[in-house]
Length: 305
Picture 1 (cartoon, rainbow, N blue to C red):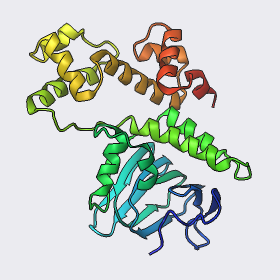
Picture 2 (picture 1 turned 180 degrees about the horizontal axis):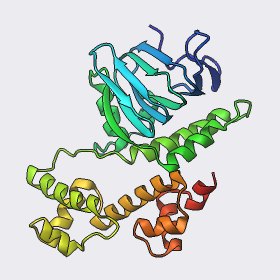
Picture 3 (picture 1 turned 120 degrees about the vertical axis):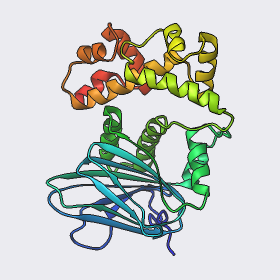
Picture 4 (picture 1 turned 45 degrees about the vertical axis):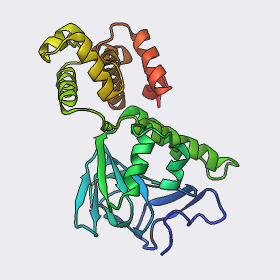
């Protein structure tokens, strides 16, 4: 059985089509051995990709417009990635169909990443996203949904830059791989990875605090107030929260605020100043610096793109 990731042959960067049916309008781009993406825009047509092989992979499905249905023929399970969402899936062997039903408008981006590509970046820490995902696809699972989250401005920005890479450039493969790495880093950073050494009591306490912060991260309670709401004390809550979520409570509030800003920037309904205020920052300059420190790009660049 031919591997999904070895079709690039001698070329390090190749553009082709998925399948041999004339109606298929999804481009296949082999960036390098181990990284492939599909992309396409089409109207009122059903598009389908059938994949059957033994490759271990992570698959990221972005439905910018329209939706994508995924069927695992091994188990009969199916999933849907609705419009405006990115779904992450893990698989150790495939007999799957990705189907975009006939819709007024479809705009899709699907990234396939082989385990041997991911293994370059193993850290030896079970809590690291790459290690977590590599471990998952070493198991005998056919297809599993790992994550489903909204498309944000940074994800769109990176993908648009990736799609602008000219295959005729002398370093097209290197540049495209760099863009893919940026996309992977961002999407993997959004995963909540369970740790094995967390007790039920610790998990419950951290989860209560997280739930309260999710309800209002724009004007959150103080740590003392949060500890009281969780029937705990400040010292214990701070220690347990950091152990479970690998970050301080203040850092988590910042993370929630910037993620919300990232989503608002995608819509382009508000100015940067308005977005800053809506997520809890009084000063636009401070907000912009924080955003850059986390995402490596200023909000104004995402608004401009």
